[in-house]
Amino acid sequence: DVKVTQSSRYLVKRTGEKVFLECVQDMDHENMFWYRQDPGLGLRLIYFSYDVKMKEKGDIPEGYSVSREKKERFSLILESASTNQTSMYLCASSLTGTVRNQPQHFGDGTRLSIL
Amino acid sequence: GDSVTQMEGPVTLSEEAFLTINCTYTATGYPSLFWYVQYPGEGLQLLLKATKADDKGSNKGFEATYRKETTSFHLEKGSVQVSDSAVYFCALSKAGGYQKVTFGTGTKLQVIP
Image (cartoon, rainbow over all chains, first blue to last red; front, side):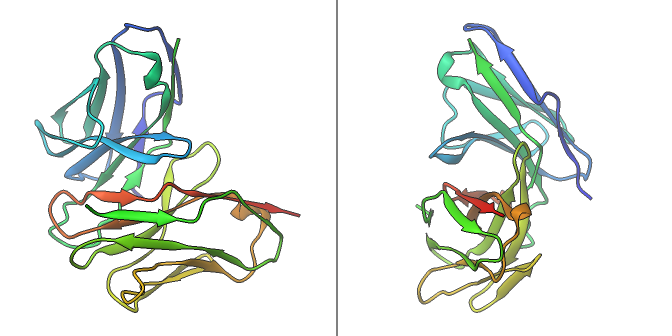
Protein backbone atom coordinates (compact mmCIF):
# COMPACT_ATOMS: atom_id res chain seq x y z
CA ASP A 1 0.00 0.00 0.00
CA VAL A 2 1.05 3.55 -0.68
CA LYS A 3 2.09 5.42 2.40
CA VAL A 4 2.03 9.20 2.55
CA THR A 5 3.39 10.48 5.82
CA GLN A 6 3.01 14.01 7.10
CA SER A 7 5.47 14.98 9.80
CA SER A 8 3.01 16.42 12.31
CA ARG A 9 -0.66 15.79 13.07
CA TYR A 10 -1.03 19.00 15.09
CA LEU A 11 1.08 22.14 15.03
CA VAL A 12 0.77 25.46 16.82
CA LYS A 13 2.81 28.44 15.63
CA ARG A 14 2.83 32.18 16.12
CA THR A 15 2.08 34.96 13.66
CA GLY A 16 5.13 35.88 11.61
CA GLU A 17 6.95 32.59 12.11
CA LYS A 18 8.32 30.62 9.18
CA VAL A 19 6.57 27.26 9.20
CA PHE A 20 7.62 24.04 7.47
CA LEU A 21 5.23 21.19 6.77
CA GLU A 22 6.86 18.00 5.57
CA CYS A 23 5.46 15.17 3.49
CA VAL A 24 7.08 11.91 2.44
CA GLN A 25 5.73 9.19 0.14
CA ASP A 26 7.17 5.73 -0.30
CA MET A 27 5.85 4.63 -3.70
CA ASP A 28 8.09 6.51 -6.12
CA HIS A 29 5.23 8.72 -7.28
CA GLU A 30 6.08 11.52 -9.69
CA ASN A 31 3.33 13.90 -8.62
CA MET A 32 2.89 15.44 -5.20
CA PHE A 33 0.31 17.96 -4.01
CA TRP A 34 -0.45 20.26 -1.10
CA TYR A 35 -4.05 21.18 -0.26
CA ARG A 36 -5.72 23.07 2.50
CA GLN A 37 -9.11 21.97 3.76
CA ASP A 38 -11.53 24.43 5.31
CA PRO A 39 -15.18 23.94 6.34
CA GLY A 40 -17.54 24.73 3.49
CA LEU A 41 -14.71 25.19 1.00
CA GLY A 42 -13.59 21.61 0.49
CA LEU A 43 -10.04 21.04 -0.69
CA ARG A 44 -8.14 23.83 -2.38
CA LEU A 45 -4.88 23.18 -4.19
CA ILE A 46 -1.95 25.28 -3.00
CA TYR A 47 0.96 23.91 -5.02
CA PHE A 48 1.90 20.75 -6.81
CA SER A 49 5.06 19.19 -8.18
CA TYR A 50 5.45 16.77 -11.08
CA ASP A 51 9.17 16.12 -10.69
CA VAL A 52 12.15 16.88 -8.50
CA LYS A 53 12.79 20.63 -8.31
CA MET A 54 9.68 21.32 -10.41
CA LYS A 55 6.65 23.10 -9.00
CA GLU A 56 3.45 24.63 -10.21
CA LYS A 57 1.07 27.04 -8.49
CA GLY A 58 -2.34 25.77 -7.62
CA ASP A 59 -5.42 27.83 -6.93
CA ILE A 60 -4.30 29.58 -3.74
CA PRO A 61 -0.48 29.88 -3.70
CA GLU A 62 -0.26 33.30 -2.04
CA GLY A 63 1.69 33.22 1.21
CA TYR A 64 3.12 29.77 0.54
CA SER A 65 6.12 28.25 -1.17
CA VAL A 66 7.24 24.66 -1.71
CA SER A 67 10.40 22.65 -2.06
CA ARG A 68 11.03 19.32 -3.70
CA GLU A 69 14.70 18.39 -3.51
CA LYS A 70 14.08 14.63 -3.52
CA LYS A 71 11.41 12.66 -5.30
CA GLU A 72 9.88 11.27 -2.12
CA ARG A 73 9.70 14.54 -0.16
CA PHE A 74 7.57 17.62 -0.72
CA SER A 75 7.69 20.49 1.75
CA LEU A 76 5.20 23.31 2.19
CA ILE A 77 6.57 26.56 3.61
CA LEU A 78 4.60 29.39 5.15
CA GLU A 79 7.01 32.28 4.74
CA SER A 80 5.44 34.45 7.45
CA ALA A 81 2.52 32.71 9.09
CA SER A 82 -0.73 34.60 9.51
CA THR A 83 -3.91 33.71 11.39
CA ASN A 84 -5.83 33.18 8.14
CA GLN A 85 -3.52 30.26 7.41
CA THR A 86 -4.97 28.30 10.30
CA SER A 87 -6.31 25.22 8.57
CA MET A 88 -6.00 21.50 7.90
CA TYR A 89 -3.22 20.81 5.40
CA LEU A 90 -3.28 17.65 3.32
CA CYS A 91 -0.47 16.21 1.25
CA ALA A 92 -1.13 13.78 -1.61
CA SER A 93 0.84 11.91 -4.25
CA SER A 94 0.06 10.10 -7.49
CA LEU A 95 1.67 8.41 -10.43
CA THR A 96 2.02 10.42 -13.58
CA GLY A 97 -1.18 10.76 -15.53
CA THR A 98 0.12 9.67 -18.90
CA VAL A 99 -1.84 6.60 -17.96
CA ARG A 100 -5.34 7.71 -17.04
CA ASN A 101 -7.12 7.33 -13.79
CA GLN A 102 -4.33 7.61 -11.33
CA PRO A 103 -5.95 8.37 -7.99
CA GLN A 104 -4.30 10.54 -5.41
CA HIS A 105 -3.12 9.03 -2.13
CA PHE A 106 -3.40 11.23 0.92
CA GLY A 107 -1.62 11.64 4.20
CA ASP A 108 -3.57 12.02 7.45
CA GLY A 109 -3.24 15.78 7.46
CA THR A 110 -1.63 18.42 9.66
CA ARG A 111 -3.95 20.63 11.66
CA LEU A 112 -2.10 23.94 11.88
CA SER A 113 -3.09 26.71 14.26
CA ILE A 114 -1.53 30.16 13.94
CA LEU A 115 -1.89 32.25 17.09
CA GLY B 1 -12.96 25.66 -15.78
CA ASP B 2 -13.81 22.25 -14.41
CA SER B 3 -16.05 22.05 -11.36
CA VAL B 4 -17.84 19.54 -9.14
CA THR B 5 -21.05 20.25 -7.25
CA GLN B 6 -22.22 18.08 -4.37
CA MET B 7 -25.33 18.20 -2.25
CA GLU B 8 -24.79 20.09 0.95
CA GLY B 9 -24.80 18.24 4.20
CA PRO B 10 -24.89 17.16 6.79
CA VAL B 11 -26.92 14.12 5.88
CA THR B 12 -28.27 12.23 8.88
CA LEU B 13 -29.61 8.70 8.41
CA SER B 14 -30.63 5.85 10.62
CA GLU B 15 -28.67 2.63 10.40
CA GLU B 16 -29.77 0.42 7.47
CA ALA B 17 -31.29 3.35 5.58
CA PHE B 18 -30.67 3.91 1.86
CA LEU B 19 -28.07 6.53 1.00
CA THR B 20 -27.81 8.82 -2.00
CA ILE B 21 -25.33 11.67 -2.24
CA ASN B 22 -25.76 13.70 -5.42
CA CYS B 23 -22.81 14.84 -7.49
CA THR B 24 -22.77 16.68 -10.80
CA TYR B 25 -19.79 17.94 -12.74
CA THR B 26 -18.78 20.41 -15.42
CA ALA B 27 -15.78 19.54 -17.53
CA THR B 28 -14.55 19.53 -21.08
CA GLY B 29 -13.39 16.29 -22.59
CA TYR B 30 -13.73 12.96 -20.86
CA PRO B 31 -12.86 13.13 -17.18
CA SER B 32 -12.46 10.25 -14.81
CA LEU B 33 -14.72 10.46 -11.77
CA PHE B 34 -13.97 9.51 -8.18
CA TRP B 35 -15.52 9.31 -4.77
CA TYR B 36 -13.18 9.80 -1.82
CA VAL B 37 -14.06 9.28 1.84
CA GLN B 38 -12.56 11.01 4.86
CA TYR B 39 -13.09 9.37 8.24
CA PRO B 40 -12.73 11.55 11.34
CA GLY B 41 -9.14 12.55 11.99
CA GLU B 42 -7.82 11.02 8.79
CA GLY B 43 -6.88 12.00 5.27
CA LEU B 44 -8.92 11.14 2.19
CA GLN B 45 -9.12 7.60 0.84
CA LEU B 46 -10.24 6.57 -2.60
CA LEU B 47 -13.63 4.86 -2.31
CA LEU B 48 -14.43 4.13 -5.96
CA LYS B 49 -13.85 5.40 -9.45
CA ALA B 50 -15.22 5.29 -13.00
CA THR B 51 -13.28 6.11 -16.11
CA LYS B 52 -15.85 6.37 -18.91
CA ALA B 53 -19.53 6.84 -19.55
CA ASP B 54 -21.83 4.16 -18.12
CA ASP B 55 -19.04 2.66 -16.02
CA LYS B 56 -20.12 1.69 -12.52
CA GLY B 57 -17.63 1.97 -9.70
CA SER B 58 -18.24 -0.04 -6.55
CA ASN B 59 -16.54 -0.74 -3.23
CA LYS B 60 -17.64 -1.64 0.32
CA GLY B 61 -21.30 -1.70 -0.74
CA PHE B 62 -21.13 1.78 -2.29
CA GLU B 63 -21.87 2.29 -5.99
CA ALA B 64 -21.81 5.17 -8.45
CA THR B 65 -22.52 5.23 -12.19
CA TYR B 66 -20.87 7.64 -14.61
CA ARG B 67 -23.75 9.34 -16.44
CA LYS B 68 -22.45 11.52 -19.23
CA GLU B 69 -25.89 12.60 -20.44
CA THR B 70 -26.71 14.12 -17.06
CA THR B 71 -23.07 14.85 -16.06
CA SER B 72 -23.66 13.07 -12.79
CA PHE B 73 -21.96 10.55 -10.53
CA HIS B 74 -24.28 9.99 -7.60
CA LEU B 75 -23.09 7.83 -4.70
CA GLU B 76 -25.47 5.17 -3.36
CA LYS B 77 -25.51 2.49 -0.69
CA GLY B 78 -28.40 0.22 0.07
CA SER B 79 -27.94 -0.06 3.82
CA VAL B 80 -25.66 2.29 5.73
CA GLN B 81 -23.86 1.46 8.96
CA VAL B 82 -22.66 3.66 11.79
CA SER B 83 -19.12 3.04 10.56
CA ASP B 84 -19.97 4.81 7.28
CA SER B 85 -20.15 8.13 9.12
CA ALA B 86 -17.60 10.29 7.32
CA VAL B 87 -17.22 13.11 4.81
CA TYR B 88 -17.60 12.09 1.17
CA PHE B 89 -15.95 13.99 -1.68
CA CYS B 90 -16.83 13.73 -5.34
CA ALA B 91 -13.95 14.54 -7.68
CA LEU B 92 -12.83 14.50 -11.29
CA SER B 93 -9.55 14.40 -13.12
CA LYS B 94 -8.46 14.38 -16.72
CA ALA B 95 -5.70 12.54 -18.46
CA GLY B 96 -2.44 14.37 -18.49
CA GLY B 97 0.84 14.27 -16.70
CA TYR B 98 -0.07 16.35 -13.69
CA GLN B 99 -3.23 14.47 -12.75
CA LYS B 100 -4.77 17.47 -11.08
CA VAL B 101 -7.99 16.65 -9.32
CA THR B 102 -10.99 18.93 -8.91
CA PHE B 103 -12.89 18.20 -5.69
CA GLY B 104 -16.40 18.99 -4.58
CA THR B 105 -16.89 20.65 -1.21
CA GLY B 106 -17.72 17.38 0.55
CA THR B 107 -20.87 15.98 2.14
CA LYS B 108 -20.85 14.94 5.78
CA LEU B 109 -22.79 11.77 6.53
CA GLN B 110 -23.86 10.88 10.04
CA VAL B 111 -25.43 7.49 10.65
CA ILE B 112 -27.24 7.03 13.94
CA PRO B 113 -27.97 3.66 15.54
